[in-house]
Length: 424
Image (cartoon, rainbow, N blue to C red; front, side):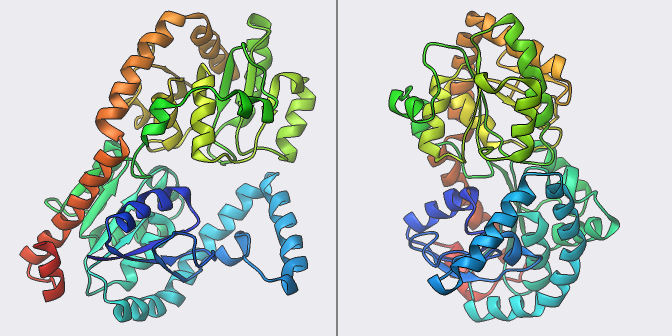
């Protein structure tokens, strides 16, 4: 099968999903919405097709002649991500994207026609799904929605709502990372009776998250003390995650459990976060880390007792499943999609994500109740193993591709090459 992905090829989520199909020896082409290295996903052909400010918002791959300019731009991007301008940049991109989609639709349509894949998979609704739905006219289209595609982006404006409706109507198949989004999709244009799957956005959780153990070398490298309660915030910089409430909760926890230690990934060097640490006088109890590799994150979860995800918009966060597989008790915002995985007080805690007092109360309860943590660990590992283990989930995804092709064939609009592929 020749699968063409319209995706950000740099994304760990996209890489995790796409690499499975490369390993299964399908022909894989990735039309990358962001500039990236040509070998970003080994075994896949990468075609760069940036749009909607993605060229500016990404870290460029450059030769030596342009390293100075690239360095200046990278420094500017770092400063943008370290301030409230991050939210403003997202708003600007959201406003510009519909116009750029209209401008580049014909070019993408021509490219897809030249590639002649059996199926096109747009791996995110905004903005890859929007442009793919407009450009892909003669080939089966599968669309992924996850995270806050519906609850945040599609409600941002009438134009985005209209693009969402058009994309869902066009899609021959739909992949969601939670049942809530499937329900929304069925009311916003996705056809009843068309194939769908509810699977983790990144394809699933690898075995090493279940089997990881604390790594003393890693803890030493990041200057994380041993033999103390460790609380991890793995969400990185996101406008819809209430990090300020998380950091304001830390002094409240330290009053009850003074040796608690807090780790925040993807926040190293963030100016705003560093300002919070100074103002709250909690720097000695907090470690800011860079974005970690999955294997490093697995070892960190294995060493920690609690993982905190104070988000007000989410699908099924991949870090939530990774923390559950790694044995951490999850504390998350009380969101409908998260309730598909966490029962408050049974295998984790749910609370108001922007309330420091509520977050602190959940963290203290989690740290003080070892019996709850042990019981939750057994429940969570079983849940993730049954519903989100990588090989099992991706096998279902591969069957899903064939279902989409068969569904289009039954509708009488599938090309001969696709019919043959569907019968493999």
